[in-house]
Length: 147
Image 1 (cartoon, rainbow, N blue to C red):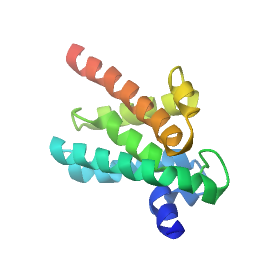
Image 2: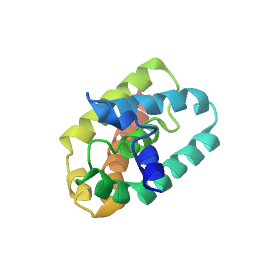
Image 3: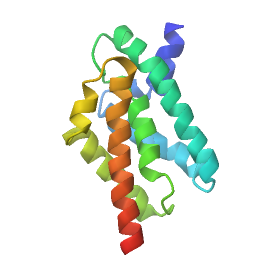
């Protein structure tokens, strides 16, 4: 069971990469996004499944990896990146902007993202990245409607 938990929390072991595992998790989400971007219902289902899997595995993975939101746990970045792109035009410009904004919010953690990170267990791991994805999506939705 711990192997399955590590597999899911690290998104098929991508989280074990030695350089920028959070960014690699966000990039991995773009691979899935490529195949589901045309179907908002399917994308919504994938987001919900990623969030559920993250909530179920991230807390246990923290214990297995030995630390609060250990760098190997990237299911949160994976799900947050998908949230960032939800219901946006599937253009290169929006994908790049979403990636950069999401990584900015995930790294800088303005309020209340920083506060959410302090929640315990899988909820704390997932909530801050979910909120970073929501911030990103809101900014890009506004840009899409204004520009």
